[in-house]
Length: 297
Image 1: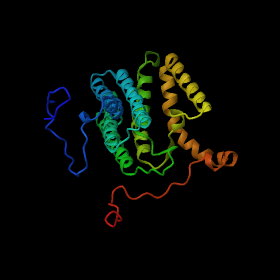
Image 2 (image 1 turned 45 degrees about the horizontal axis):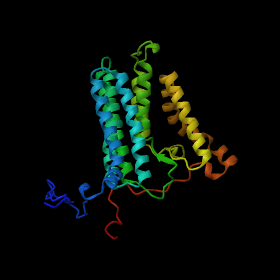
Image 3 (image 1 turned 180 degrees about the horizontal axis):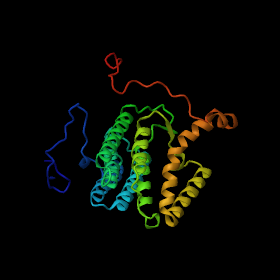
Image 4 (image 1 turned 120 degrees about the vertical axis):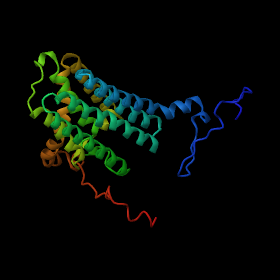
């Protein structure tokens, strides 16, 4: 065991992490406190994201659907924060990408699936189980596809397929709004659980592009900062006055912006130029088959 500078040996210093691939693994103990905080800061938000997702599941099983939906909203905020912090401090890494995806599968795959299942269970147990499994499968496919098709040259203004946090927000906002006292209770019709569980799940695995709105999350000009502050203020006021309606507007509005963008693309291109519409997507390698050029490299 090594010396920590005070003449004492640090416990467990003889243990070392070894990568199966041979890559060098640097222990956090070897870093300064400032550097340690920099590299672990994004993972703190990722861990809270995962914790909120698990708590949402437990609350859903207890029938506390409103609180379960609120915790999914907390997970969405934490997911946005961990990516923003990672880019801000320059701590993006393959480990962080995998950790984030595993947390997202719990918070935006497992938690919404359980929430839909328990919410609609009393009247449609089999259908709600199928809808929950379908959601979880689509979310897993979406996250796995994202991990293997990360393209540094891709247009960062767009996501391919509905992002899992946005899909989860549809479930969260719908259940939260319908469980408010002023909503008069949940109408146990078949159409609502089917729509909120199947449609966003399908959109997650499609190749439809959705705006990322990264310019709002990371403004770089005074005008962009002003727009971000106005949007944030409007959201805060809306959530304070009418949280149910505000959540529905944000969640459903984000989903609808993709088809509306396709319909208005010719007009926007004519008025604002080609930069106002999504560029043509390049054909990506298969996500199922191995890359034939990998062995030749």
